[in-house]
Image 1: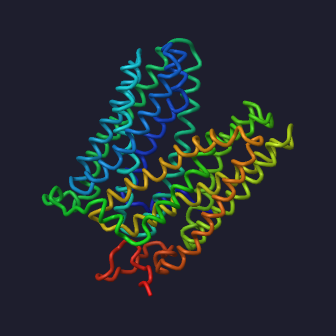
Image 2: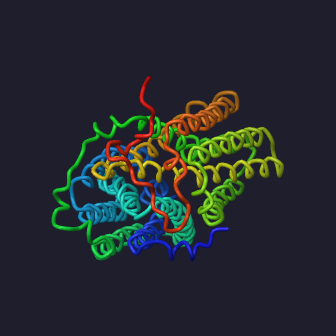
Image 3: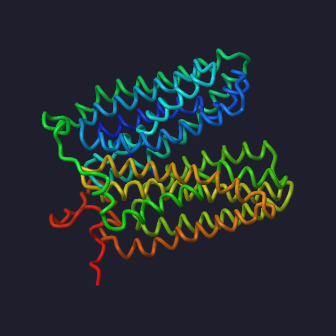
Length: 438
């Protein structure tokens, strides 16, 4: 079993600071996470199209904004970009507090989408500055646990606050979320120079930068990003759309059962990092990908069976599927994130993390679209079949991944204090292990 306190002591002051900032941000995000649709339609009395368009605009802005932030991270001083990202995201969520009509709601969506698109990118960029592959891998794992735990706590507190009547309570929640971003901006502005003084020297603003074209020329990067997109589609994208739509549409579960499933998702995600986070670092990354794909395939098979039943048996089967879905998520996303950052050249690291965000977001957006198109057919069973096939495809990619990755990248050292083997100077960092054609 991983000792969280011992691992925390292993982290550098820089990594600890970023984890603390993520905890504050995640709690603030949880405060408002479930409420935007309810807030705009029921509390502010706006037509149903307003929250729908607001969410769409926010998502579209986030995709475009994420690419821009990635380019800026590769060109400007990191603490400048980090502070700007946090300030814009904080302003955007605070603007929702005053969204009394369609125009203010859409304006808030644009500002918030632009800001929040950079938050995950800059946090991963900062974790990637860790001194060793081991610390990077453990930092991404700890980040996943912190995000889930603090988001869940925020949802609980936000639900208690929003239970009372009146728009004032929702206004307070959005302003509180905005405040967490201001705290994050101030904390990182103060802490990053001390934690990474050599990175903030006078020449940082003039550091060399590559373009997205250079990133895409890296061998096999498209396969990895496509795999991340598929992982997101069959997990995040369906957990909040296909799973509840299938189980409730067939009458297998009610609202109470779904609430239990969402709570179980958070608990398993956090416990998996506490119990398995360090052990996973000792496994081949290709093996972790294969195990996650297999877990998801079995999970969706269990969900498919649960949707055809009723009562306690259906609930137990569905929750077993949720456990496997959550376990697959907790295993694969931190590992693939660490892999991409181990492979990235420093001068395009911002862009690589931006593309990672876009890949995950694309899967999350495509998931509900896929569910909406297939759930009306044959009691939703075609959706289950597509998801199982997608999970098996993820597992199959692991075979190719093991073939093209150097052993040091597929299975980085798990010993405390161990440094990664030096990279040959003649090889590009992005998937240089791929064998030459022919």
